[in-house]
Image (cartoon, rainbow over all chains, first blue to last red; front, side):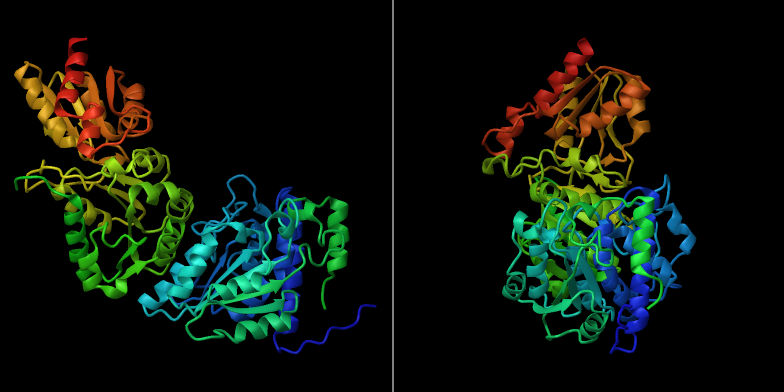
Length: 281
Length: 310
């Protein structure tokens, strides 16, 4: 029998349960659509759960509230995880998830802010989320808005140069209400990140760009919640949370397998995966 | 109003007037405060001038974010870099996302003549015109520039404004009313229609004068909105006779192509498309290059006369 996990943060057990639901739901969506990116969905699930079920100041009944915290999923191909999160959080009915990538569905393979309540940016091409997040954080200052801005990128995505333009400007503008979370699962579509274009020493690179850097276990909900609660870490500096994750986390035959970037589980594989993920803690 | 005018002056004066009344307006630049003529704007509104440095992808992405914050960015940069370098951001972050950003492509066409084809912006209309939901406007003179900037601010949604730095004469009367999507007939005529935009409008009017001395009655349309194009005006012109288009842009995909798309579907007539004929321009002053490609009153008149005489 699996040992019972002891959570420290009062919200952690519930958040972990939501993360499990995001994993189960998104994997079933990919199976039904016969399309998707399950590896990246699973690696981001704990981060999304911590943000949407505890950290973000959001109201699903008022998705356009000007004062809301902003979250941008820059790795837009993890749309199934985002849609599952938004539906579980109450932004739209769970039943709509069954339309994922169907003809004329609102739930495109990559998210559309004009179609889906709670989506803040039309991502998909990589390296777009962070510049938009810089604008949102700068806009908060110019308009005296109280919101905070969060953006989740993949790690392979950091090979796009636009991110480094945005990193420089965020420090220049001293945007300490901006937090970048990197889903550091070390895999990209074709290989490891380090075999493709090396990102390490990643923390040093961010430090050299003037950001406040913190590294966490991206599947340790307690650490994520504590880290997000302690923002900003340095006045005048944006924060990057390097979340060390496992691509495909939670399903043994998907974990750390490069082909599961966009492989689709068969019915048998889905059943096995759901069994491994379990229902309740 | 005699002499030649740099439309960037009317652009900046208008933006300052608008910003004084509308706190949503911010200017966003890529180290282009000077080349976009925004020094006075920066003095007046230092907290509303955002300089992201030499980084066009970030320039447009940040602008989308500022719009998401409820602001109305006027995002200014040399048109060659603004459109070419940031095209995917223009497509995805602005047009597809429907963000209320006004892209201001400065010093467009061959205004940077001597600097060479890297700095010429003769593809920007083709690129931007291909993007759904993006309005594309090319003012012809300071009067139209002022009105186009005001119209852009009064319209919600992404708009590309192509602003020239090359001196142009005033072609519109003081009471002129610019309207997005509406061509202006600056000269009536029955034998041939010259459809021009931007820098070429004054040259089209001069061409019509030349043609009149040869007994040819040429209409002149200022097609300041390239997208959505004024289909009715194009069809009316085609019903009258042949059409010459003139633009400071490659003939591949610009104004001439936009007109031809309407003509072939609605009322096929013979056309001549004047512009840069699908090549990189040589080195030379803007004036030299326009002359080199026949983008002059004489060149336009010759093309029109040839169509009329068949």
